[in-house]
Image 1 (cartoon, rainbow, N blue to C red):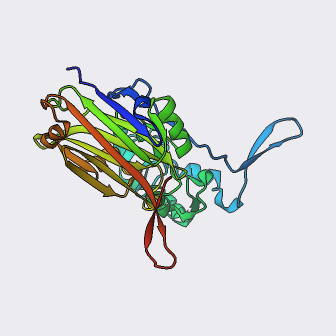
Image 2 (cartoon, rainbow, N blue to C red):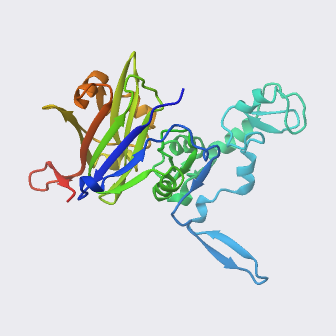
Image 3 (cartoon, rainbow, N blue to C red):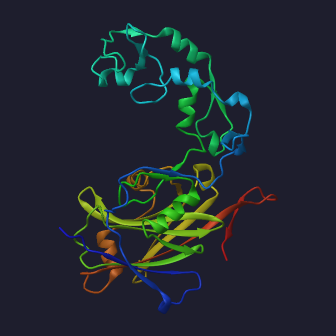
Length: 340
């Protein structure tokens, strides 16, 4: 069934009503996102040296102690999935190794010599791994940490330098990268509206508010305080009841997100709903934030009341602002720093 569209009229700081830009709600499918990408706008810490014969050699700048011995590193790489191996590390009778996950995938046959694997552990290699200290795999993105081999994987799952996932919610976009790269990706590939300023005024119009689909949603990106914020608005089923929800996500890590606050307001006919909170980092997925109900939630009956008229068309105006919390050194309390 074809989904109804939501028309959004958005006005930013200093924009007159007759200058409001119209655009149509994006749907959930997008043709560009069946592949993985990664990019970083940060330069890799390295220099290019030219040898006597004219060949170029890339050298990583930094302590030589963080560069693992290639031969040992290759020994700890599973030949099937190419990931680092962790106990239990299995081996065949000829000494070929592989990780425990891939052991079941190859039906207990050595991928190198095709001999039966059995249940032989490579304890020697596990001991070698235990003695190693390796850099975080995101060291070329700025992480300076070095970890024992068995602690490295846990750190990399929460490393502040790990790339971010695309915050676009309408498709399973697999693109990852740093913030400048993702901003350009949202603008160029997803055609997301970009606005400058810390206040916003959106009007959402839907012709048939009684039909709510999970794919009915939109995303706008705001730039203020030198940071980027994603404003989400969507309709979805909450139990048996359709609801509308708006929330803000910060394009950065969780710690920095706590430096900012935002408010959302919707209303009409002398009534209004107000939400204030801290934006969630895009480290938290769109679905995780939505399902935690961390935002402005508008029940359908209330939304129709705000729309007025014959209640056959949804017309919601959501206004809001973003501010930065600043520490008052005299009083020891946070005071808002509003964007002018």
